[in-house]
Length: 315
Image 1 (cartoon, rainbow, N blue to C red):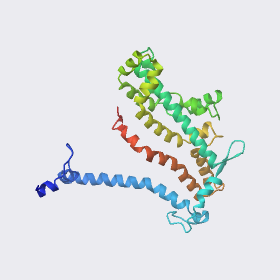
Image 2 (spheres, one colour):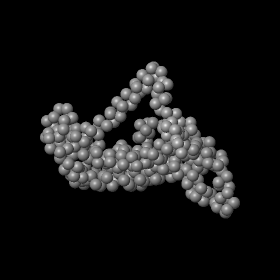
Image 3 (cartoon, helix red, strand yellow):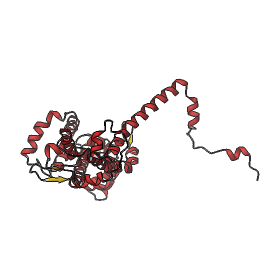
């Protein structure tokens, strides 16, 4: 059976999808210039994000004396000292309030349990409060929603003094219970996102559960939470990254439980004062601290982006 040459070269295209080259050809010269300018801005921005990591990586492999004698700190290391990364694990430390040394592995473990506790308690509390406000009618429903909005407008600096006094009087200062109690407020950004998500879930699912003999807890845990799982996972990842990078909370309220963020901040301050230490080992520690967050974001970036659209989460 003969087949025409045009039939062989013809490629079936998906409906509603134009060829990108054809779209570019349709652009006016002014649009092409604007497109090129925007592309150049994004390229410069991307390079600005890569530069700090390149700077830290190059200097983390240098000898401390080589680093101090240089002026630009952008040259290649003479000797590639990967042993600085081992020194960051074994030698980098800070002292707690009693003068006891706390080494890098302990700070790493503190970062893990602090981030997990803050994230889990915060996201669960937000899911619980947002579900109740979104799906149940009661007298204080509007008041709770107003408090959730108003709490986001209060600047952190404005309530630090009173909040510190409250934490101290409650016995939560320097206590591992601090992240659980304070993160269990249930308001903030997570509340607003989950409120809109729960509002979009039809109540007919709950009615069907009630007919089958299920109660309100069954509806929440077995019906509503699975429906909101994409939003919960996205918020969990974002909250975990925020808690991992939080250093001021640990310095103010939990100084004897330093995380990588707060511990490296203290070490950086010590280096700037000239109290001893090694900048190359410090840069090696910074890169190690970035690895878990980069791995999480790389592994779940598709999940995060697939659940976000312009202006909010997908329904």
